Image (cartoon, rainbow, N blue to C red; front, side, top):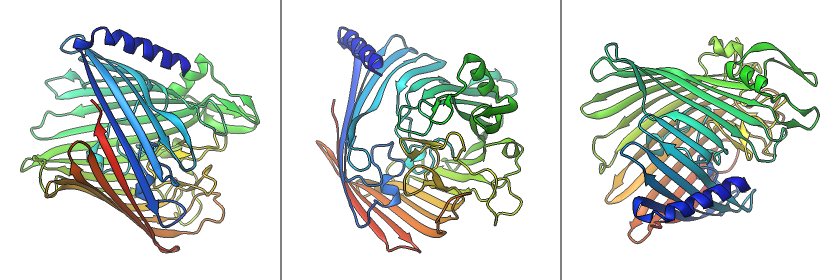
Amino acid sequence: MKLSLTFLLILSGSLLLNAQQVKYEGFGALTGIVYSQEESPFWIHSNQRGRIDESSNISAFFSGKATYQFTRHARLEVGVGGLFHDGYTEKLQLDESYIMLENYWLKVHAGRKQKDELYDGLSASNQNILWSLNARPLPGISFSLKNPITISKKSGLSIDGTLEEFITDDERHVENTRIHHKSFHIIFDKINNFKIKVGLQHFVQWAGDAPDFGKLPGSFGDYTNVFIGKEGNNNVGGQEANALGNHLGSYEVYINTSVNDYKVEILYNHLFEDGSGRVLRNTPDGRYGIFVESPESDNLINSFMYEFYYTRDQSDEDITTDGNDNYFNNNLYRSGWTYERRILGVPFITLDDERFRISNNKIIVHHAGISGVIGNMPYKFLTSYRKNYGAKGARNFKKNTVLSTYLDLRVWQDTFDVNLQVGTDFNDSQSPNLGAGVQLSKKLF
């Protein structure tokens, strides 16, 4: 990390020498939050990019980037940002620290970079059911196609792909766990006003230092097995698995069209963690959704999203029993699919009271979001109705039903912006939880 910061400082200094060719951008925000229970309502702290946790009252962050345009299609970007919030974690952290190179076909970045927000921030899981905006970005390196590559113009076929490697630097059961991620999609757009994108997301937690078993397999040969998900008996200290590491994946389908100039996307994510899920034995588990966007940007309703999440099957023929897959949990990588004790995937899957193990991964959720403009005030409204059924092996978990709402309203736009935020949780087993916040933000340059 120190080497990365030194490199960024040196590079930033070289950019300053060519200041006339460099574009600078900066942004800062300060947020204050109050709430009626010990922890804030669900949507006040969820999907906040790791900038707010469940018990935060104050959050402040800034970010800046410098962009140097080599040619029309090639540019270099350097970004850095700082973050502080109180609550469970009270320390100054890096919000971002990265260098990115981009040309007309490829994007490469190294470091810690925040992911782009999709669907106007209305989705509960942003890109994918396994990869949301709920945690601070992981440090690593990423390669992705800037635009899909055409493989047959006559047939209307193209491909898209991503390859990423990350390292965890948080406090967790297996320290220095590595995370491998790749995606591959095929796109068909030969039919007028119709595009379908079908593909796969694949994640693996592997290597690291386990407290009971020492250093786990982490050689290049092990990486090749991780990459291809090679089957075989992997025994580490008595922990057996069918493949090296903790594998998670998702099949994806996205259908895009337009109706009366309104953009429409229908989406489906199927999640799996083992061979039974890969052959769809855990159907109907997954994410189902629709997103509609207006051609204009100043309507009362500019965009709308509805998502349905179902994870009760878990490769079990009878959904009333414990299930087999136990999503986001793992016997060896006991911190599960988390980073800094935050869920990396859809935040409806939640941790236990110690914020260590997944205690609730059997859910049925109806989620909706709306964005638009009231008067001259932009807003975003989220509401989620979810039934929580616990998880395999979770102790003392009580099934419950929760209705969560969230409103973000920009009430002032001038030298700086002022957003009012209101969140509520109505739980059938607890008293209502009410929360409110004020955010001051400003473009710094």
